Image (cartoon, rainbow, N blue to C red; front, side, top):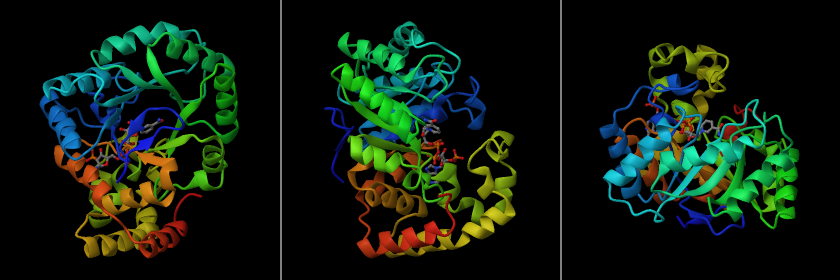
Length: 328
Ligand SMILES: NC(=O)c1ccc[n+]([C@@H]2O[C@H](COP(=O)([O-])OP(=O)(O)OC[C@H]3O[C@@H](n4cnc5c(N)ncnc54)[C@H](OP(=O)(O)O)[C@@H]3O)[C@@H](O)[C@H]2O)c1
């Protein structure tokens, strides 16, 4: 599968990257969602992703207050990766903070990730005390200062994307990306204007939770006891995937899992690989995906999804079965 540009910037990425929320090591507000991984495991995950052709990594300030960023940098160094040969994306946590916090935090982000430069700096979500134009002016100043290469946002609506893109245009820049939840069980981007806005503005959508946090692997359908054993944070109503983990949710989505299994069997591929191949094909070059992994085999398998070429008929059939059960 060919590399893709983030928006109209010169930042080029593989269709599938590696999400590094799983590297939070139990720290910070959202760190408890995933089991604590040791550095050796994280090294092996990064190694498997790179070996499989993944060229970029997504992390964030919020993922353990720098723990994920530091672990990623350590893993890349252990692998002997030269700075500038992979793409690194991280995010500023804006909740209840003014835009000037962007300039305050960038030094820490750079220190956590060094020696790897920040290719994409994203506003993690709406929620800053400052306006979107004010946030974009601060981001643009970082690009001009050579501290980051490109600017992205995350969890932004179509209207917020347009505001961010217009503000960056005033600064002579473009909006590279909007990182949003897209998977076969959550296709709201098709109806809420985000996909249309991305296509109209020339902005890449970075699909997070592309496996619906593991549900699209079929593991919880095969063994519902695994769903009951998940940590509360992944089962609670606060987690967008939790509705699919109930007995009713699993029953309702079973036809989709059966379809992924049938297509996978025809190609000698896993359900996760079919779900990812669908995601990075169905929306053309507009969508790239960043599956997370807690084991090296998972990272190897998701990277290999880039080699899986589904037929148009398969894409269309999966689409129809998914449309009947997904959030839209
Ligand atoms: N911008 C945002 O607000 C936001 C929000 C969420 C996520 N993200 C980003 O998106 C990335 C991915 O999202 P996510 O972690 O929420 O969900 P995801 O990628 O849909 O699911 C990741 C989980 O799926 C399971 N998995 C992955 N590959 C597998 C394979 N080949 N076979 C079987 N199971 C497999 C693993 O679960 P187990 O660990 O349970 O084995 C893994 O931790 C994150 O790491 C983060 O970088 C961003």
